[in-house]
Length: 189
Image (tube, rainbow, N blue to C red; front, top):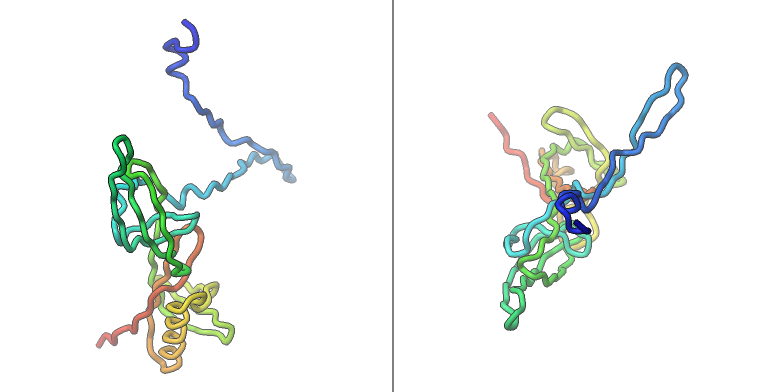
């Protein structure tokens, strides 16, 4: 028998129990609620380094990035092939590099693009953005923080002041979001 018996092998190595219930007292009855633990894991998914391609996304130093170049090199006699990634942060445009064995997993962010119609632009730089359903959100500011964002912000401001109808694309990843593109809406006759 011993530690390597069939029973020990079948048991899970890591056990995460159910959420711990906490009891909140309300006026009429006891209501059982569950504490939600936010791990951030839902914003990324694993992918083998050798499968990440140029133009794809990956997480480097905790930031969502877009890969601009990948080179794979074979190392010594018993070494692993290594992938050398050069990427830019999708929100700050900063260039970053990462060297990962091609057989290892790395994190890839879930990146979502959403288009909105620009309906308002305040003096403080907040945007009134309308969804296709007609809902308006006013919690995003003009893009800023790097040269490309500043150019885009000036372009949005000028086109809005000129009375043009604009569609803005918002990029979301890992709990951050920023406007990353703007295009003039074509008149439909």
